[in-house]
Length: 554
Image (cartoon, rainbow, N blue to C red; front, side):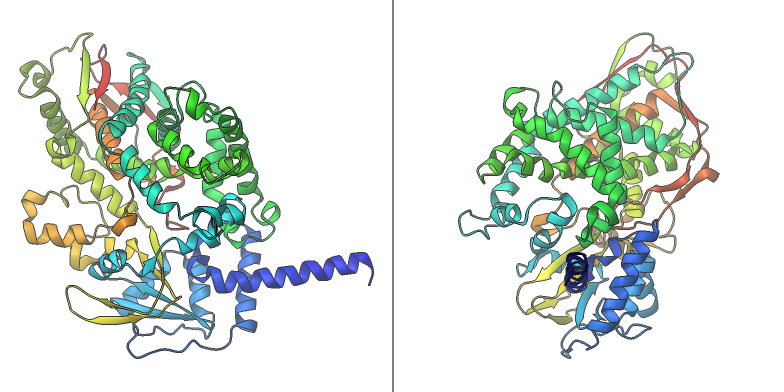
């Protein structure tokens, strides 16, 4: 056989093997592909074709398992629905069927989807439902690390123990107590510098508020994490590459010709990794005293697993991304909702003034504040500013569209703690828990669940029964032992920044008619649609507050 033909046949065989693996292994995550590229449509079409040709036998179903929702089109209907509608497909299924949990047959595979909040909570706490299994499949594809690296970290190489227990300890230590305080203080200090740089007369013209916040969060958070002197994200091009990677990573999940199928994400990922590599090679995490405890402790732990610097650089692309992605969207939407409602802004301003100044008549009367330094106490704002905190949680509720995934390790009976109904979940089956379904459930959140209600989380006004019900249905941070460890950090920095903005600044020009929330493609927090980020704005100091210098304390 001619060499070229042999190569072609080998490529086709490799392609088919990859396609089959994609169908069997990626069914629970196939919705991560977006609709923004013809290449992705092609890949999706190939997967669907392979599904039809290769997976034509329906999976067996035990009567004790969750009820089956049959696809509109045999074999591949649910797969096509996920590809076409992404996260919204789960909402559509719930609207049509109103089941607490269901089985979706996809080819000869099946997928459990939990729509009910109490059942989701039970699943998140179940010991025989695992989150780590997805790391084996997806981390090498998304971040480009070697399979051997993942095997080491999960204790599958026969030499190293599973890293997850020690890593959980690193997260808990880094994101609590003095370590959390230092991380928040450094982040907020950079934000204060930005506020203090705003011209007292002209303000700062911001063409796109979402992108301005994206830059602010990236610069402040990366400096707090990686240290001031050798921060790999000092370069705006690296920050831009990080967000380019985040926006276009979907097709990387396929693991097939990433430099072609997912070229934009592939190149952006390489750029971030290239910025991280010299950081690890020079051991700046050890030599720079401004490096966070989190980065230092995490890197030391990873080094115990004999990870070379290039693998570290690949693996740690996720760090700044995870620390900023969901925070950015929720902060943007909270600011957009508050600053386009003048009456609400006045209430939050009064609340923040009282929290910062107590009963100071000068601050509350609107007298000229002169050139004094004003310190925003970040700690405790959740309790001191309940309306602001409610607005932030409400923004999270609407924007958070995460889909939490688990894999059943062995046959498990899952019991609804409210109804008492039990369901058999079969081993080696994937489970998905869409937050958008429970976050928009009108039974829990009221008839206006699709809209923004600033008082929806004002617990004192709602009573203990409603509070318990809504807390159980509020799942933006996951749950169980895998609950997002950075949630307290996010609350601290966001509430403090918004309190300072409410007290001392105006955002002129923010246009509600130019704001529209997009749908999540991969279960991330929803961003504004391109061109609908609120229009050009001017961030100005309020009258009588022009000479104030801003600081934060934690």
